Picture: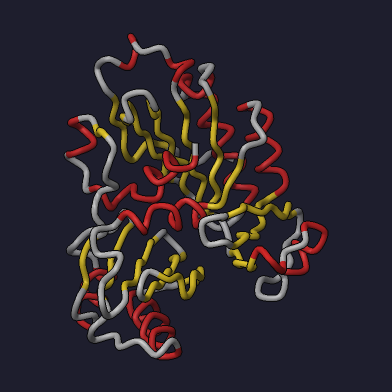
Length: 289
């Protein structure tokens, strides 16, 4: 079956071909209908290249795998020997478990308290010592196996784990009335809420329109005794300001802003021309290598 495969975004530095890529990290993010990666030079704390493929269909894991196989056929940079390759998955829900109660042998049981079991799933877990929590999630077993084989790496994390490392760096992290981060993808969004610097919740939800996000956001804030009229809300993801989703959010959320570009890193000129919030989740992976 043929797919409409094309890179929606392609940026790289003119020095990329002269750079010793064996000293660089390849950061790979796999979502539903999206395959993105960035080349990161840790010595200069600089992102040297970024490419993002968008494709249809966007719901079936088998289609994701077939599309990614085609990406490997056409994108030879992926075959380069990097210092390390980090695989990140934003393909399904996860659950945070307090580290003191976590037992590795029960990780599947923790996950399925809130997430339905999927066919051909591999259940993984990320340690988050700074919280301290464990992020338990599932990925498609065939997709995980293919990527591990192609990249010769076992290093994998959930995209939400990287976001949890990035959000405390936001200048408004300690907003007095709380702060909420919304990371939007094509079919789902990640909702993360803090108050007084403390993580209250991180959840993934599916949505069809902006009103679905507004409903879930307002309902969750009220359950946490936070006021949606006062909480600062930061929005990330490849979403345009003139999109219907953004307009619906803007209509109901008084303090809506774009999440700021991740500080402390160097971005090539072409990357600076793309809104930083577009690939906030991809850049956040640099905090995990």
